[in-house]
Image (cartoon, rainbow, N blue to C red; front, side):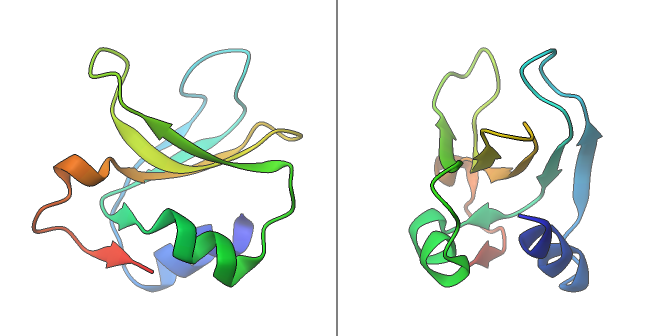
Length: 91
């Protein structure tokens, strides 16, 4: 997922948060102000099985979509697709 993080930085996508977002079950989560096309990115990067697609539909805990590593507990997140109108979409 480091490559995806680097790609988003290189494209000038605004980083909105980097750090331990949720407590013990996460290490470093980085959020970007864009919509990530989850299936296209997953295919393009050929992520291993321990990198999971993450889609949070709960408006109380934060609606987001991205990728989460089950081993290192890092994540790269974008906006939930329902809130991405007018935002950059990354394929």
